[in-house]
Amino acid sequence: MSNMTQQSASDDLDLSTVAIPAASRMPAFPLTMAWWAVCSAVFYIVVGATLALTYGARNALIGMVLSVVSYGVINSVISRYAIRTGLSVALFSRVLFGSVGAALATLIFFATAIYYAVFEGSVIAVAAHHLMPALDYKWAALIVVCYSVPLVFGSVQHWLDKFNGVLLPFYLLGLLAAVGLATYEYGYNAAWLDFGPSGAAPADGWWQCFVYYMGVWVLMMFTFDYARFGRKEDAGYHGRFNFGMPFYLVTFLLNGAAGIYLVSTIPNLGALSEVSVVFALLKLMGLGGLLFVWVTQSRINTANYYLATINMQAFFEKIARIRAPKFAWAIVVGVVVYVLMLADVFSKLLQALAYQGIFVVAWVGVALAHIVSTRYEKLVGSEIECRDSHVPAFNPGGLIAWFAGAFAGLALNSMSGTIASFSAPVTFIVSCAAYGMLLASAKRTWFVREARIPQIDEA
Image (cartoon, rainbow, N blue to C red; front, side, top):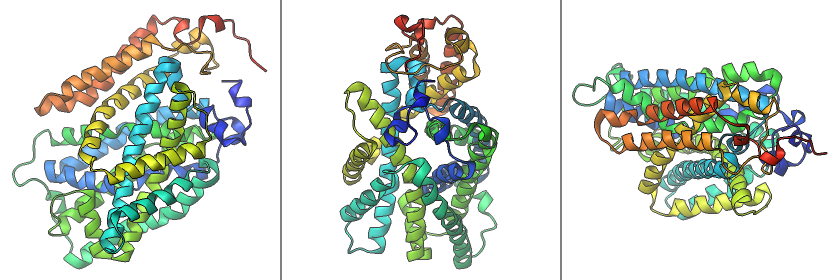
């Protein structure tokens, strides 16, 4: 890593594929503005309402609170490590799984980010078409993609923080306006905490809600690729606040509670989905509702497009030896997103996300076990070796632990009833424990190539 940190901080392509040098780190507030783009999405509003409808509002809120705590604790550890090392998910995965094994992690990451970009972009296009029927959906989708792609031509340091910082107040004001207008239009719903299924809420409803949020642990990967831009002196702030519990109080609890209130207050929504909630917002707020949807979805999509781009770049550089600037990969991402927005593949995308989510949880288990262990430092030293030419193709310990956790989760996920709800927790426990045990007997050659053991820094 010491060699990579000497590379030019001004080259954005380099910063996409190497550790972030100290000179290119961001002040605390700009990084906060860039990262908090992730907190705004109609998805979080709908998830809260859907869980409440299925398991009861109180169970949903308990699940959200538990998720806030678990996400906050894990991401506090992950963000501090990313800040200390400057590594990305792609580079850190080389340490965990080897240079070839890491390609699978970047594939899963960029595919997941693309899927989310498809969902969030479709919400804007559907909203625009609904409010302006003369604008056909395919053209609305094209407009969304055409303005989204250039947003990530720049970098987190030089553009995304400013764009999302300007839009953050509009998101918060829009959410407040939606709740206020719903109350004004339909009256205050004092029984919103009793919202839920027609019969008694399931006894394990809080657990079902908690594990549901484990399905979006890809946010741990999001955290890693954003936190690496933080300055080391700000690590405490980022770990406690920016990537910690306060962020998830807004992302899960505030959005989720607003979703429960809106859905329990607004009548005749029909089947709950992002689209039905968007239609309700448009009915309440008109053009203001479209602006709110645009703000929320555009903010989250800056993260989706950016992370899809840099991880696609890393994947194809390794697998196909294709070297192209970041803006070229952003265009490729845009093309893929647009094609999927026009295709009727949402059910298949949801199924793919369910499977990929298990692999993501397993990745987090391995990553966390590695971060809290001192074994790597004893074997390799304090400098982290992640250069493609200096690490082995495969790290047997990381790969065995990763796939052991994933297979355990997939096996449970294929079952029905309560046992299936343990798929994500078991995935995490198995991968974390397996990697911890394998580390105890790890060899240095798992992490560095034999020929490179007598390390000589290159000029």
